Length: 243
Image (cartoon, rainbow, N blue to C red; front, side, top):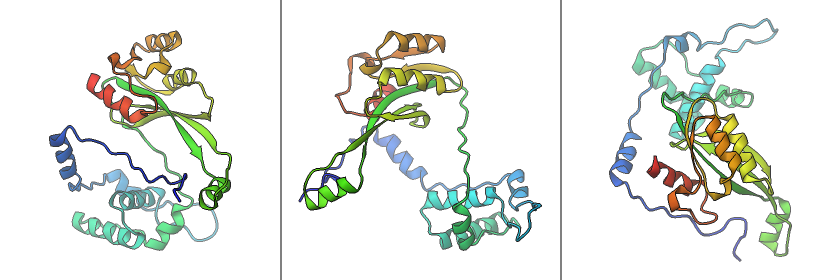
């Protein structure tokens, strides 16, 4: 029986920029690890006034080790060994958190994601996508047959030309694209050079919001309107070619 929760089809993409794509694959093997003097000084945790055992490693140390683990797809024990080898190559007298410490501290670690500021104005791309909420009823219907009521949410995203998410809004399934697009523009910091979106955002309020930010608004994508349901990836592809 075909599952409605996990469809068998897979989206296929055609690579049209083979030289850039090949260089990107090669650069994935370029490993450069550098620790600033501030990071070295902040590697060990500062003592607190609380009673009990004091933490040996700071949150910065745990976050750094877990980031390396995520980038290189390493288990916890291999992450411990990898950090030790990096310190040995750099000739730095620092200890690496052991795998049990990484596992325990990761549960309470609070990560502050920082976006790198760009000198040039942002090329903002706006679109939305539907999210299907699959619960016990949906899973049971897919496995044993029958019907169930599927829930939906709508995710509104504002990304830059590189695909980095700058603003996001999660609404119910009937959330209006144009209204939420205005909120996305307001949530983007810094200068905005242009705003690209599909015809759902072709409203007077959208052009006025872009004008207040000094941005050029492109809502019809120069006659190359993507098909309904094409998604943010297609809009971003056209936006990059127009940039």
